Amino acid sequence: MDTMFLMNSLWVMLGAILVIFMLGGFILLEAGSTRMKNAGHIAGKTIFTFGLASLVFWAVGYGFIFGDNGNFFVGLSDFFYSGYQVEDMGLATSVFFVFQLAFAGISITIALGGFAERAKLSVYLVFTVLFSALIYPVIAHWIWGGGWLAEHGKQDFAGSTVVHLTGAMAAFAATILLKPRIGKYNKDGSANNIQGHNQVFTALGVLILWIGWFGFNAGSTVAVDDGFFGFVALNTNLAAGAGAVSALIISWIVLGKSDIPTMLNGALAGLVAITASCAFVDTWAAVVIGLIAGILVFYSARFFEKRKIDDPIFALSVHGVAGVWGTLSTGFFATPELATVGLPGLFYGGGFTQLGVQFMGVAVSGAYAFVVSFIILAISKKLMNGLRVTEEEEIMGLDISEHGSYGYPELFVTKDQNVGS
Image (cartoon, rainbow, N blue to C red; front, side, top):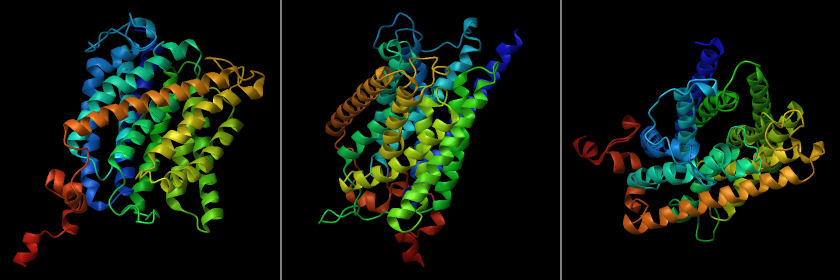
């Protein structure tokens, strides 16, 4: 067997492992950013929903994205994927399948962040199935599977739109229908800061995500022969660092204190933003993209909070707003040498053509993800007697109300224990 075939397969498999390991980062990020009475629930539902999404992706998701005999909207073959090898991809197709499955798993994990601390476990189950079958694969086909946006030359190397914006818009629909957590807003409309229980967990989660992103972006080269994955990794790291720095500085200037959660969100925003453009822009542009993303995430979070959008892990700002900026950025910064898809950006003599394509892709993809998510959740709300746990269950925490045990059992004393003491 060809040595390059094996090396490509090994590289993409490593990328898939790194992307799946990002789930560990999301567990720590989401659990650390919320209260300890929900920590076990958050950890468990992340594993459960990834497993469920994997089965749905195997059954229909992959086929809807990459299946033959499809059309501009969706693919129509390779359902219940068999794993048989096709030799014309330059790597094992089963490895490519696992890599793509990992991306689908990350997108639903982002989406479910908007449900945090108040949604029923049954809602997670239903929405994971329908999102993984009807929302993510459709947008992925449009851009990566030869659909209508691919025909227009839409640039999204590793998924600022496909993965991050799609997940964020689903989270947005959830936050609207679920409404804010108890105690988030006062009667006069002012917001209370419901702090997460562990900033160290949150920071470690961000670091794990940062490392995993090298699989996300550099792994998307799906080849090792020209070493281009190193350039993609460089751009990815520079944007993340720039996002962390700019978010920290802007919070320091505006708040008078350097806010750690803002800095962490800035790093993630830089990563999300560079995901679309990491293979299409020069290194200096990667720094600019990250710097702008870090500033945007700070103001975006404040904007949504004032409008009573309770987004516990800032999915809408980190993955949505930064995803939009990252997708649009190629329309400005894509170079003639690197624009292997579409056209060069505005600053390189390409005019507004590519920027227009990028804007169209963001608008249509974001609208589709939001509208279909909203419809699914609105119907679920009617059929499932609501999306949200009861007030009593929310106050006691989802660990005990949904699972019967706490993530931190030694820190909680039950009524029975009090009686016996």
